Amino acid sequence: MSETAVRRFAAAFGGVVAAGSALAIGYLVADLTGGPWPVDAVGVQVIDWAPGPVKDWAVRELGTADRPLLRFGICVTLAIVAAVAGVVGRRSPRLAVGLAGGLGLVGLTFAVFSRSAASGVVERLLPSVVTLVVAVVAMWLVVRRPKAVAAEQPDGFDRRQFLVTVSALAVAGAASFAATKVLSVKPGEALRARFKVPRPTEAAPPMPAGVQADVPGVSRFVTPNAKFYRVDTLLEVPQIDPNDWELRIHGMVDKEMRLSLADLVDRRLIERDITLTCVSNEVGGPYVGNARWIGVPIADVLAEAGVRSGADAVKSTSIDGLTIGTPLSALTDGRDAIFAVAMNGEPLPFDHGFPVRMVVPGLYGYVSATKWIVDFEVTRFADFSAYWTDRNWSEQAPIKTSSRIDVPKGFATLKAGPAVAAGVAWAQRRGIRSVEVQLDDGPWQPAKLATEDSIDTWRQWTFRWNATPGNHRLTVRATDAEGNVQTATEAPPRPNGSSGLHNTIFMVE
Ligand SMILES: Nc1nc2c(c(=O)[nH]1)N[C@H]1C(S)=C(S)[C@@H](COP(=O)(O)O)O[C@H]1N2
Ligand SMILES: [Mo]
Image (cartoon, rainbow, N blue to C red; front, side, top):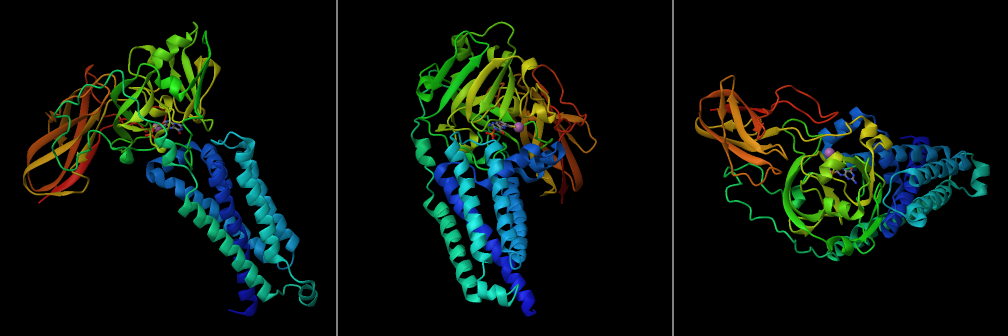
């Protein structure tokens, strides 16, 4: 490398270190305050702005991996601009400092306007303000040159000063990052531990024996919390102090209410097994899970508040400002719609809405399952629109009768002879009457159903046959208890849930 190239590279590197140290220190401040890291403020806005197909693709193909990927993409973009700033800074330090300040201002602007769980102005803005200030100062430190050097050589620089500055910034950045990761100042689990799972007034009946198909590779009937699918639109999930949490109930009601967590659980609590499903789930996809929930019937709270005539919807809002619209009828028709406070015997995990979320049997999550809920407004569909409906998803969306093959996995190799297939089927609110499978283009044959837990849970099935050598295809379809046969007509998830039949292709030797 020529000397000019080495210098240019060093200058670019200096710019990146300046920006990196600012982001790392901002990250520590975000952790301390609970406010948004500017990268996440930008990221959440990118999520909100992402055109539907991109978002659908990200949810489907990347799952939760899209979160680190989005952060990474934003950081790479910043690094490129910072590198350019470092290089132009050799001739024009002011321009470099201006670029750093500009980037910082972008972060600050997004922190003002993006959805965030931070409520106070200080916590919401401090991480971005600190990042901005550090970015400007760090960039200035990196590009500044002693007057003598500048006079002698327009793009020369003081090597010793540069090395000392860059090393010091790198150490400061690394130390801040390490402090966040190692010390982890967030209270985290300590907050969750402040809430003791209350004993339900009405415990769930014992789970019937035989709900779990005895086949290796089939889903666990109760999805463990750590394995439960997660779908939301945040990069950093809120960690709400249960002692600060409050739910506001208002709108078309006779009596407005504000409930603390203690107030809420001081009511009738029911325990129920309910299977959640995401509208983004493709045929055969993983975004469905079953858990045992404890919560307060929403109908009880609505009865206390007194619903005014004319209302047909509830608009619920999570702490970050995301809104969900739910038909009032689904909350009052006798089904077990709850403000849930426990999932499989534990306080809700942070990822799944701690301390309180809605769970409504029979409706896709995006129209019913508000996590980190803080506001509950009785209203009319005609008077509002919600986050997902603004993005061309249907206003109302009951879960479609569906089934999935868990084993054999696609492209598995089986031994000829006795073989077994197994999976799950769901039609929440209606229940599963039968499941059938088809081998290649053969006739539909009944699968054996595992015991039903409730009509609001999925149901497992198994099918045994004598496998013959060759490549084969197995297809599954369910029929719900109202006699509706799962449709073979294929539909994508948008606008109101995928349809079509799941199949798996495998080889028998
Ligand atoms: N606050 C909030 N609640 C939310 C969402 C969200 O993005 N933010 N996503 C919804 C969607 S689309 C689904 S499918 C369920 C998923 O719940 P889970 O992540 O606990 O599985 O939560 C719902 N509740
Ligand atoms: Mo969803």
